[in-house]
Length: 248
Image 1: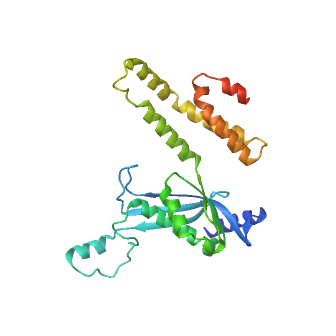
Image 2: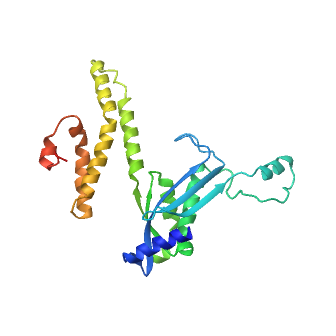
Image 3: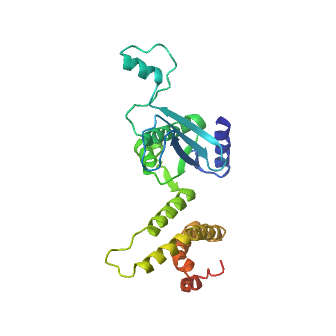
């Protein structure tokens, strides 16, 4: 991890990406816990958070949180004092599993200057706001007047998009609707094109990324492209021609 930090630091200095002489970098962070059912179970005893350098794709920090120790728990149950042992419990027992992840990642941000001599200025992460809120709350770079910025990663954005489209495809027809057969057919049309919509987002993003416009212009144009995707996928190409992207 030390070598990875040195490499990220060197790359930042080469690009003159510094704040008051301190290099700043972009990192990718995520966490997990041992027992996990997405959106329903948050009672795992162990969790981990990892931070990876965006440019090098190398690990900069790993933090592990444990809410349980078998020896301590058994001694407490028997009303005894636990014998001397190497205890890995380092988090309070009643905390939710999401706190395991956020606490570990916050530690990584707080130790970035000491470990690597860099500022983690931009965070690429999933849509979970708890980690980012914890980072903002702890303000690891308050003394340098630096606020960590967050970018949601493409993978999680597309996964959430597909999840919401599948929810639309499962929507039941209103009770007051007379021609429910047409409604069912429309649901099938949406369901059958979810993958195509996802592919189109990626394709347009690639095209705009290769363009020569300024970054903020690329983002605005991509936003318009994405809003036009449903029309394009379902056969209405008027806006495609207006935007000059019919051949993209």
